[in-house]
Image 1 (tube, rainbow, N blue to C red):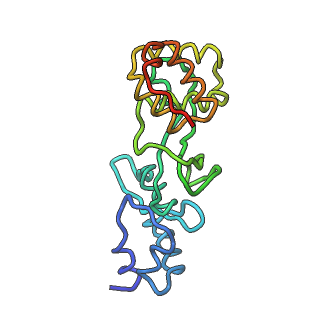
Image 2: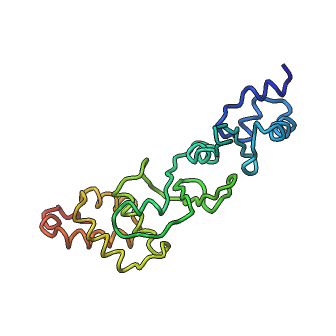
Image 3: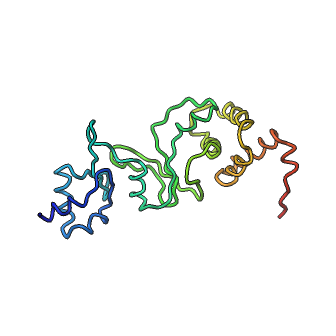
Length: 205
């Protein structure tokens, strides 16, 4: 078995790799990378980022978002989101967005990885998974970017809160909301549930 064949045998279809990951299996990594790309066993996604194509009945499948982003961020915590998820909230959003948002602690900006672009946004805090409560907060955070009527949308969010776990929404707004978003939810929840708000202990400085 040649050195290149040994290198090729280490690759797992469907997995993404950084050049540094691949260098551990080769003493001539740049030559082997070039040969692997020419042979179709690796595809270059961006500078220093590669994908071992996974073949399906319909051809080579693209890398999964979570695997690709994890490799790009070197495994750092992140959350994949899309404005399209707001359409599941029942608040009247209608726009479709060709964008995947990556909340994380390390990178900020739009990066093309392979044939797709990802908008990386650095955030001090985000949950491990998407939830209804987080999506409501995230929608209000990003309201000016959605192409929707802001005033009408806030009225719809208020109406949606009547049928939600408002304690969970309040916690999500305090954890993940901008200052403007926190004020909106504090005010709106107080209007919906004034007795509950009055009964909560007040924290004094």
